[in-house]
Image 1 (tube, helix red, strand yellow):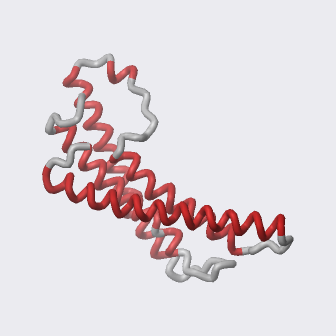
Image 2: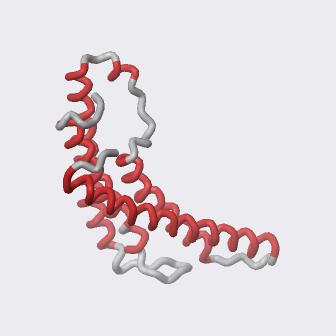
Length: 163
């Protein structure tokens, strides 16, 4: 993606940090699942907290990865109908898609924040950590999705993204 303007540079910097976080979460997930399998099937003493940590890791991977997929144009798309439209209509459809994504991302951000706040007083049963750490993935993902959707929308409107 062309890093045009200030928003493009901000998105590129955020993407690098997000990519590092995703790599870290993937390593944690891999180590956790390895510990889970070894403890359960080799040592016959299952570690009860590993299932909860793997769920937490997967939640963060999904919400962090969703934003990156928007930035990298990696989501599954069916475009045969859109491609049949004239260029102006294609641009309008793509702009509408990113406007919808902005709206949905805003819902994730706002409602996810309210949901995460409820997790301040709830403690996970096996790891004994506040559930806000799990719930916070929703507004974080919403924020990243909003940022990248805005970048893509502006790119479409300015004619930098193919219609």
